Length: 170
Figure 1 (cartoon, rainbow, N blue to C red):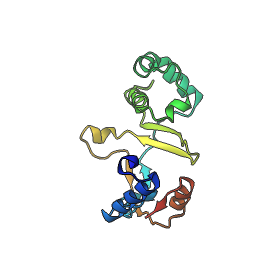
Figure 2: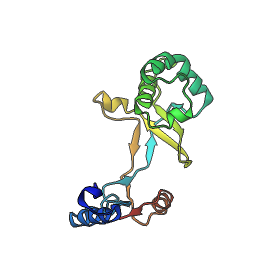
Figure 3: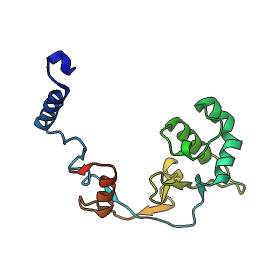
């Protein structure tokens, strides 16, 4: 496009940046200034022991292949699920797996409460809770949340992530 205006790509990029700043947009590589204001860190507590599918285990991967393999193969063109698939960007696949597991009755007739899996960024476990009672229009879900605490722009974890992924916090 720069060629159409008779300028170099560097000049076009500089003009683009000027225009974005003039319009009040954040600088490239920067989180919006209000990102921290619109989010909080919450701690969750359960009223009872919860049952989780651990997607990071070989047993779970084998179970997924055995029970949902044909549907996964047909819908997502994946013949054997591994961690690469679970941590990947194929949302059709990950949604199919989590929905299938959500609807699965356990041997005692109950349902699991959610899934857990190793973080693909190596920072512990990720948890996804299925809020069944809320989905059914009931109250008193199994998990309660604290009020939450504000995320500060100088939070050490946020700064660590911003350094690792090369962006600035507004």
